[in-house]
Length: 500
Image 1 (cartoon, rainbow, N blue to C red):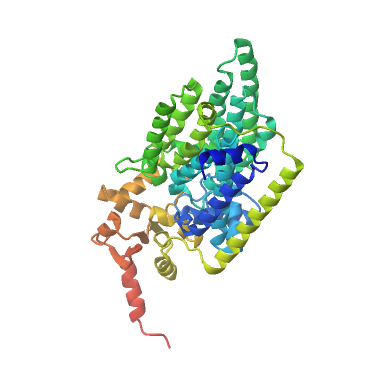
Image 2: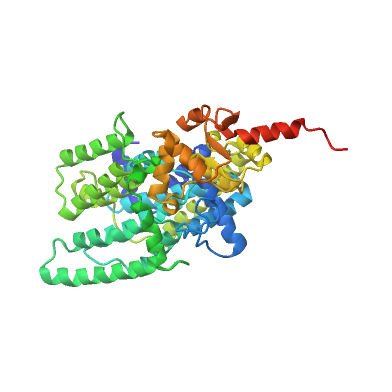
């Protein structure tokens, strides 16, 4: 199909809403088929576990009750609503539930994204941008709360950008988006932070008198958005809880998703940055300083933390959409009111797409069982530890979520903000055995009676040669070490004659 023919359909079709819906349906079916790739982060285990606790107790956590190193320490869940949704879906459909929920969130993200771009760009380019955004985000599309918040983030930034483009203030009708985001995931602070740059873009070309009036209205909107973000069960503490992760300093460089981008080999992110530069040079676009600031901000976020690459992928096109549309040689979409017949076609088409997606889901679920990645689930090793009734287990970071799902107190898990920079840095140094004293000190300080480590970790290899410790079990996923005196006690119990 040629671009001119597609452009003609785009300009004259009375059912344009079907295009975003079709893109969303395509994204949904794709991630349903590759659903096992969404189950690769053990944080999903404790997210589901906390959601179930909330449902069981009709309350929210304010302290930690899953670790033996921080019992009773202050901790709140800034993703409580996502955790409930994941828990309910898991209870209903096992791992298929979180997979379907995650796929639906990605589908909604893609559909909203195309709909927002459609205001300025031709449908083919909007769809292409959506495909590129999803590809860039693949590494971080997981069954976790940040994906459920992704469509809300895109919609919120779309609302702000649309208002800035119109030199107006966002409608307060959209404030519930911020409340929803704040209950789904702690990333809502980005949405609050973007109000300032968007306000500057809105007033940039206006005369001074209009600038002051419009800036005042944006300021009031920002205050209202902050108040909306506090409409959670935790109130204003939600803001503090969401920013705690940013206070982890050096630790962020050791957690994989918070690491900076690595360009040692060519990546999709590197290609996107080069493509962004190429578009700017080829089009000869002149952007306002606020838009340049926004693009630099999203690029810096992606370079600093790989988990922010999806923000770069989905938000940079929203910033560039209007300037790209203005320089486009292709015809712009025709404006006009939609007739009742067109609305009927749109509704019927949407229902047919939803029915087809649900039918496909039912058929696929009947023949496929979703399973969590094996290297995050040391099932056999944990079975043995439960048989031995181990109480204080020094566990690998990636095994924390699975241990929580088995109701075993953990040494550490993915809630880095709970444990703090000093503790987790000490832990990582012990695991890497940069100093032997770090490992032995932690084992003694916390009275560890068993270790559960990744099979090829330096600490697991060193424990084979530390006096007082003995390897009890090992496979290609995990290794267990216990104290020598425990092994001797087990052997003595086994050798003791049975009592008559």
